[in-house]
Image 1 (cartoon, rainbow, N blue to C red):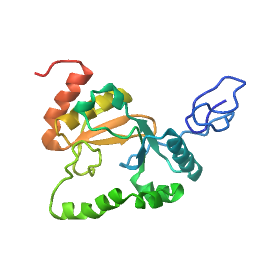
Image 2: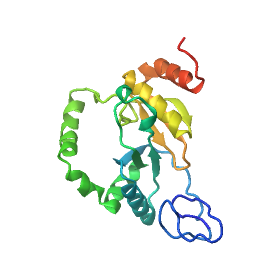
Image 3: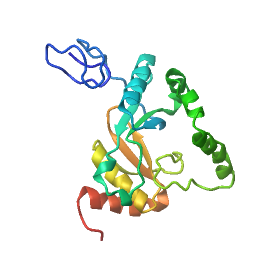
Image 4: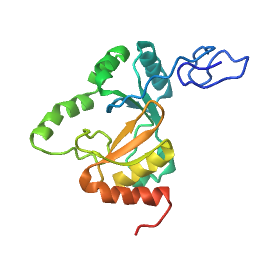
Amino acid sequence: MYCPLCRTEYRKGFTVCTDCQIPLVAQLPEPEPVINEPFQTLWTGDEEPALLEICGQLKMAGIPFGKSERLNSVFPLETIEWLPRFEIVVPQSQYSRATQATGLGHRLGDDEGEVQAVMELPEMEAAGEQPTDAGSGELEPEVATVEVWSGVSEECAAMIEASYIENDIYFRREELENGAMKLFVPEEDENRAREIVREIVEAAPPE
């Protein structure tokens, strides 16, 4: 038996996924093809019930998505900006459908701070300025174009992102449907970004 949402396999006798709280199925559908296009953040938050609800809505609508969990607790609080625990991303071409299927377009409009941020963004772009939120992962693909790391370890990705934030390196994360992750940085930050990856992955001191 399998969970159609998280695809976890269960022994005979189980009927409901203990994580997603949905009925199990005898067979999983064929995996969706890997999508070779940029992903866009649909939702971030700290509440697991909200995460499961949105994932279920996207699944019902047939919209591909990726989800991740950040491990903020593994870092000293004074070294990083506290980020939301969960994130859901969707292909950019499916973003409008996803907001309609989940109702997130209306929910986002209820947050005055988010509305203000959306209103101010065109002014920043008109002035030729980049967002000042270093390491936010919200950079446009044409800004952060150099891939400096790829893998499936959320803990390793979180450590690299925390180091980029600490060193004021802008980055962009892409998460694929198969669970793999990629980190991109602007070309001018490539050398520093790769050195940080080397230090973390190889546990080597800086040269």
